[in-house]
Every structure is written in structure tokens, then in C-alpha cells.
Amino acid sequence: MSHSLQKLHTFGFQASAAQVLHCKNNVELLQSLDKSTKSKQLILGGGSNIIFGGHADLTIIKNEIKDIQILDQDAHHIYIRVGAGVIWADVIQHALQHNYGGIENLTLIPGTMGAAPIQNIGAYGIELRDVFHSLAAVDRRTGVTKEFSKKECRFDYRESIFKQEAKNKYVITDVTLRLTKRDHQIKADYGAIKKTLEQNSITNPTIQDISNAVAQIRMSKLPDPSIIGNAGSFFKNPIISKNKYTALLEKYPNMPSYPISDSQVKVPAGWLIDQAGWKGKAIGGAAVHDKQALVLINKNNADISDLIQLYQSIQLDIQSRYDISLEREVTIYKNGVELIDD
Image (cartoon, rainbow, N blue to C red; front, side):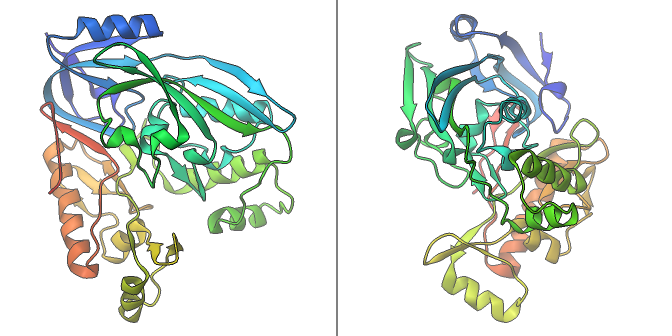
């Protein structure tokens, strides 16, 4: 017997798995881990950063642990523990309703709370690690719950220990965030936010104003996955040396960058792809979005082979033009096997 995965990942490819188990609490999670020992297990959150194609001889464990609790607070900060299955948009809404600050720049990022630390989600000058306190995760081998501190998570740009040596070894059950209750540190200097606030005649923005501005920006250029299948930003923004960037500026004087350190800068992958002429181009049913080149879409009943050919063609072109390697943000499973780029 197979179970369709088409509605469990936002790219919307036809795909199936041997079994899908839904877990609404820690007890059900542990039971599911025990029940699925006959086949390989894969933990799934919102399905916004993963793509399936073909049939997978896998047991998909859908993490649907949804609760938000206050753990502690002082005069300036509050610590909230959020279940891994809570949709990230609901975390944002909860924070805004209670005037908790720190995550408003991350408005409209898809996915769930449990996936956020794995990817160290980020946007518009903010990353999850900026508000992260700790998380709880179940060891899939022993069933024992372990607490991970920020240091133990080893966060980096779109990276964490859960994408490296702890990959597939733990199931995150909840995450604790440290948010501000007052004197919020408004991050409005990011170019697009600043411009949007000015257009809306807002000179002293609140956290709600920042969230509204980010939502306005994202909705203007990012496709709604319920209408057009996509997985958000497909590639990471590459980090290169300042020396390499300086050399590239001689040939591409308009190439933007963001400082990372004294010796490194981040270059927008979307700009590279756009300048290379890929915006709007398609291979089979898969295409580059015509408003945001960083997003690949399921334009016309694509299959996974169309997508693979498209993104790999983009990688080869960017490497050839700029001598810059593009790395996927998105995890891809084809016939149950994770695709690893060389």
C-alpha cells in the first residue's frame, strides 16, 4: 500500500511513500518511531523545504506537535516554548498578538517551528539563532530526549548540527525562543524594508509595521505555494572572499554584496541567476519564477527530472560565468533516496 505525498510538500510533485504516520504529541511520536522500524524513517514538518518525486519505500513521520507555552520571563524578555509542529506563520502571529519582538522580520517564511532551527531560517537581516534559546529533541535510536543549547546547535548561515553530524539522528519536539517584551530592537535598515516603510509613510515603525512591510515585500515577488508549487528560495546566497568579489566587480560593476566578515561577502544568488538570463526560463514543466529568480516553480505539471535538469543547468551556468558555486537550500528525495550534488 502506498500513501500520496503530493499534498505533504509544497512543490506538489506526484509522489508516494510506504507509510505516513501523524504524531500530535511526544507519546505518539515515540510510538511512531517504534512502529516504523521495518522501513526507513523520514521526519516531515510543513514540507516547504523538501521535494519528493517517485515512490519512496519510507515511513513518513509527520510531526504535528502543536502547543505554545511561556517558560520564563523577566522585565525585558519572555521565553516561549513552541511545539515543533506549529506552523511558523502562527508563531509570528502569536508573537505579534502579545507584542513579543525579535522574529517580525521572518514573516511569511513557510514551514514549521521544528524545521526552523535545522535550516537556521533567516530573512531581511535576521536569523533564527538571533532569538534562539534551546530546543528539545528525541534521540531516534534510544528514545531519550536531549536539550540542545544555542552553542550545541552550531548555527551558521542556513546550517546547524542537524544538517551535519546530527542529521537524521534526532527528532525536534519543541523549540524555546527568547523574545523581547519591550524596547524592541527594530531592524528596519534592510534596503527593501526601509524603502517599503518610506512608501507607506512610516517613520517610527513598530514590530507590526515591520511584519507588514516584510509581508508586502514577499507577497509582491514570491508565489503562493497553494497556487503555484514551489519550495521558496531554492539556492543559498553564496559566500565568497572579498578578493574574489573585488575581481568580479571589474567585470560586473553592479554586483551587490553584503559583508559577512573582514574577508568575506555574501552575494545574492537571485541576482546572479537573473543577470545570467534565467528568470522565466523553463525546462519541461519546471521554471524559474518570473518575479524572483531565486525561486523555482512547478509551472506546468513538472516531474522531478525537469526540476533536477533545470537547477543543475543553472548551477553549471553560474559556475561558468562567475566561478561561483550555488548550493541548494532544498532537500530532494527521488524514489526515496536523497539527492546529493557533487
